[in-house]
Image 1 (tube, helix red, strand yellow):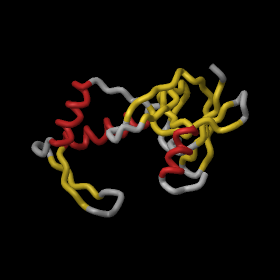
Image 2: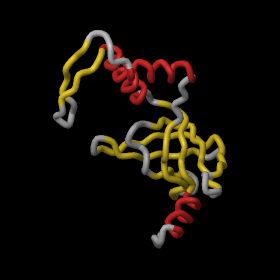
Image 3: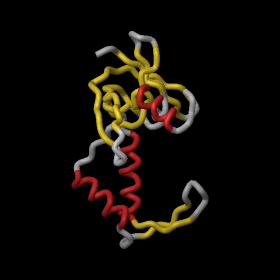
Image 4: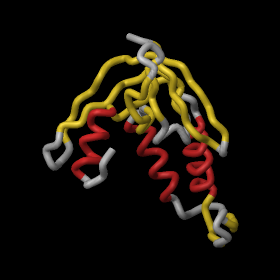
Length: 145
């Protein structure tokens, strides 16, 4: 597969990652539309979504970054959910980023920290919507690409 460059905006700075196409995945939406997406072996980070996926060999955009693969075993997903819902035990008063005050349990704080750390992990597999599907979507939505 040809090498790729992945560009994204994060914290008002540009970043660049290099990777390879691992394949293409096809799936159907609930409405029956078939969507294609590139499976990419590259470092995807928060903030890359919406950035272009560039083919080095062809010199043009072949997709738009849409998500990173962050697999979590069902048991651990359930643990995080239970921790986040736990309202008993030691309570802490905290002020959120929007200025609101709330009381949270120790378990809820642990869940917040674990979810935050999980979101910061740099993964090497992600997805990109193909330019063909993106152009079709824009046309269907009345936008001339």
